[in-house]
Length: 207
Image 1 (cartoon, rainbow, N blue to C red):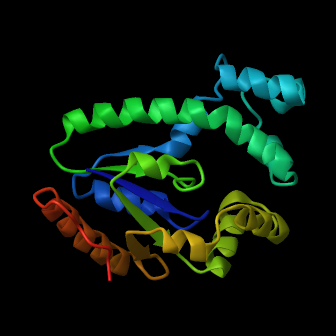
Image 2 (cartoon, rainbow, N blue to C red):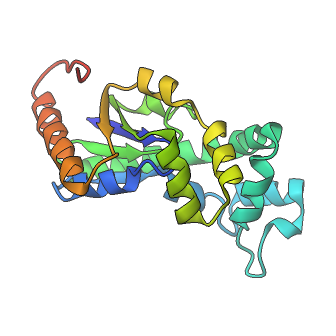
């Protein structure tokens, strides 16, 4: 079984994935794959440079992610263009990594992706787990973590799927607005349900 783990920016996806990891569950990180497909020598980086020029890379030839982020969050068309270039490469590599991970695991695995729904990656998973936090918490965490101002943080949040829409598509939800004890309790409860699901034909949504 593949569980898709998603949530808005700064919702705590990596923290939750690590908590599942402590229980022996492996995962594939779509963000890491996204970085790989724009590494020097990759076709996607060449296309980005052809569109935006050599200034979009640093002196080492690596993508200047801050510069690209400023472009795509200021222009919806540019964001959509970038996704049309990178998403097919990401999807292909995700399939490969998930297959490799499943061969090594007797339990379920996680696909951790901030764009699980937007990119169509939800079609690759059996369950969709949403990590939910209030928008105000997202903005505060993004400013602190990424060193951006509130305006840019709000633009990033606004460019993503709305909280309401994301929750409407969830099979399961973890609310990450408390401490680690509360978070770990939710993770352990879902882990038990997912392991039981391996022996069942269906699993209803979390009430």
